[in-house]
Amino acid sequence: MGLKFGTQEWLDEYRKVLNENKAYEDAAKTWEGDFIFIVKPSGGLDHELRFWIDLHHGKSPGGKMLAPGEEKEAAFVFSGPWTNFHKLIQKKLDPIQGLMQGKFALKGDMGKVMRAVRAAQELVNTILMIDTEVYD
Figure: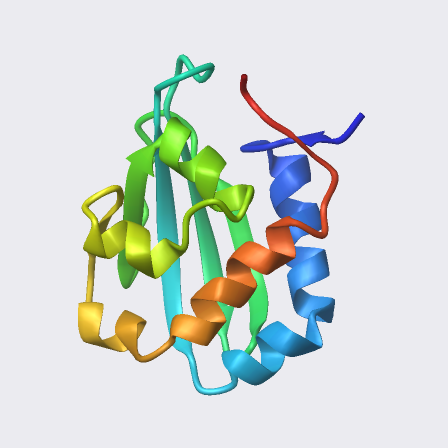
């Protein structure tokens, strides 16, 4: 059985695998900016998940699950319902296409994100390297 998506254990494993992913490192070598991901309840998920991840030059020096009500500043906030995140982590939905189609919302410099399409795709590809248990 895999690690449950949206737990600190899962996030720690994700960051470990991301930091070892040469394709991500190459794609994000000039990226500087942290994200808060907000996964809204839908489908099999009955509560909101929020996590912060620091991304700097192809590595992730930090990350943590945020408790309900816990605030954290970040350069970007990427949010959407679980059903769309589930499609994203199954590679049935591209993160940039999802933004353009209104399936996700982004707060932050959209131009900077649009210039980092390959890095965004490698963030998703890295999820596929982890045995992840999802909310059905």
